[in-house]
Amino acid sequence: MTNPLSVSRDTFNDVMVPNYAPSAVIPVKGEGSRVWDQQGKEYVDFAGGIAVNCLGHCHPALVTALTEQGQKLWHLSNVMTNEPALRLASKLVDATFADKVYFANSGAEANEAALKLARRHALEKHGEHKNQIIAFNQGFHGRTFFTVSVGGQAIYSDGFGPKPGAIDHINYNDIEAFKALISDNTCAVMMEPLQGEGGIIKAEPEFLRQVRALCDQHNALLIFDEVQTGMGRTGELYAYMGTDVVPDILTTAKALGGGFPIAAMLTTDEIAVSLKIGSHGSTYGGNPLACAIGEAVMDVVNQAPVLAGVKAKHELIKNGLNAINAKYKVFECVRGEGLLIGAVMNQDYQGKARDFMVAAVEQGLMCLIAGANVVRFTPSLVIPDEDIALGLERFEAAVAAVVNAS
Ligand SMILES: *Cc1c(COP(=O)(O)O)cnc(C)c1O
Image (cartoon, rainbow, N blue to C red; front, side, top):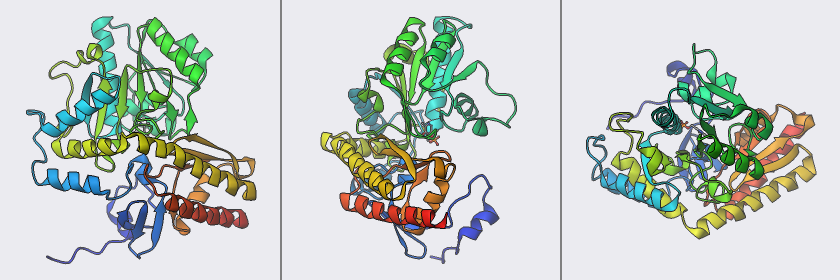
């Protein structure tokens, strides 16, 4: 074998489109909730590849699924179906409200399918007038043009010319605004049951109940984007299971593949019929390699002790962050569910979440932000308690560094 080309962070600026601003660190190896960079420095991973690596890095069950399927069959296209796709779909149907599954490769694609299905269903069942999509400010649904348009952040949707139409946004948890907007022209409501990118903000139970009731009253479909909250992240297999409401369509991605790209849209028999033969599709969606890994993820995650563990680990991290805050007074509150946790900056540190994230990397801890005011933690669902303790120790050192520098 020839020597691999030597690459560094500078190479990024030379050869990559400048849409990202990655950290100076280049990780080369991961195991469980630890990661090592090119220089051999070790990190505790509280970021999990943005809520994706739900079983940490290189979990043995996933390595086995990847290598076994990798030696059998990778890809066919949807001209033929395959065993791993059929098994994973059966398991998703068994575990949820859904009767039918459509596979895609990313969260945005699953949402694109959900939105197209909702529009087509309304058109067929009720007519052209029923096309309004209601969504929420600060919501995030992916980066395709339809999904950024439905997402509620102008920074992602503006500057690309004319957008898809008939999409209206209101504030999350504002039931009066919702009541005023919904009508028989509403085709669907798309929402995250807990806004992730928007700042780790939970939908109020009463808000959800009323949204569901009004959707029923107006024959509008309720779409839950569970791309970030799904696959055990909140301590339930899907976040809707911890609420009183059931959506009509649910999208799942991120943790579904544990780090391998796969996504799914789940729905009922009645709605699924509107995606007739040829109406939508994907070359890679539902390929055997991705589905074999998705099946392995689901087998490990959808177990009562693992889901209970997520809730227990939530307490450990929340208590640790509150203890740090008692000393340094930097957060207004710590919020979120399961292992989707946000530490919200107080008055003195407005707009400074990124400083804490950058200081954490310095101390050997990977974490995230959710907007300018929230430090976000989305570790592996099976992160060992010792790694939580070590990560919190390193985060405290990062907080001390930020506080002392300001
Ligand atoms: C990450 C995310 C998406 C987009 O998923 P991609 O795989 O990046 O396309 C959509 N919705 C939510 C809620 C997300 O967190």
